[in-house]
Image (cartoon, rainbow, N blue to C red; front, side, top):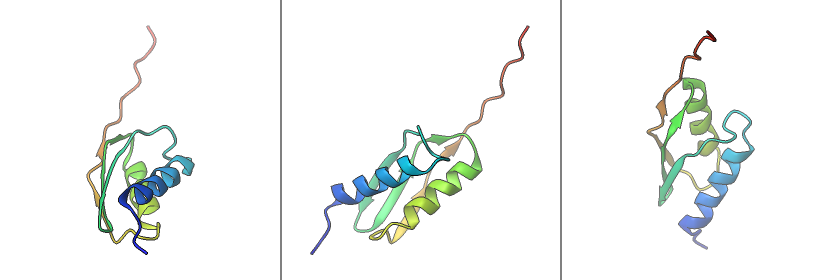
Length: 79
């Protein structure tokens, strides 16, 4: 039985939402025949790697193209 792309994306989104390092992240996920592309912005290279490893561990994912961008902001000092 072939899994639909929608159900694979649903499982990926669910896994990402359960990962405490990625909670609240809005990522764009595309899937095509087991190839998954991640896009969006995260705060650290650790979060980027965690997203990739989370997706890679899901059954039905054969390859991950990690296009996540790391953008951290330096907190402003109070005046």
